[in-house]
Image 1 (cartoon, rainbow, N blue to C red):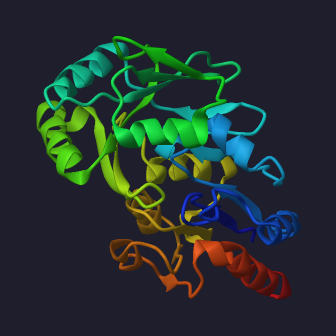
Image 2 (image 1 turned 60 degrees about the vertical axis):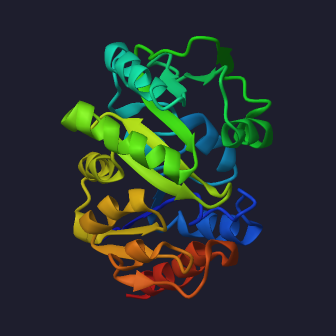
Length: 281
């Protein structure tokens, strides 16, 4: 019986340098010949493919916190977006907190091209992210009056917890079940991300779509993660594996806690050992 292995990227499979080690690449590409391997990430479809260009990826990718499931040939399997009206309303509410989001949207469904609109009013953390990671990103455009888009994949706020937590609570109260609100620490930049998505944009929901597409049962799935947005997958999958540097609340939901961190190739070492065991069986 073939097994499915799904890993988060940041703080789980990627090193803290936001790269994949040669060891992890080699193990992944070897084991992809014997098991189904894929990823589930908050990153966009385009960025994910950039990071993983050297990996064998024949299984659908879960991207944008679960908003999009698509294969590498850009065939859409599942998509959940916010419409422009609710995007506009969310941004209007956030103005009361003097903070504005990035707006990441799908510009076409055929080629899965994305737009990445940046507000003209940026805080320190937002400016740093753009400078460090997105300066050459062709999707990027600065918008004087940031608004929602027709097919908004997600709205992303960055800042200190003391600013974003009250905003998260306010948006949850105003929009209730119309949106998914995710507030989580970002260890690379020592700040917080607040992500607003469609209520079905969740890694667990996306994983269930992958199960349907591949005709794989949840009990035959192993997932790896470190952060709060991985907990839904942990509850759904047959085996939940936390890397050593995972949040304590994530480790509490795991079946297995690895002794290695993401910087020590924790996922690849697990795959190396356990897929070999499966083949022997």
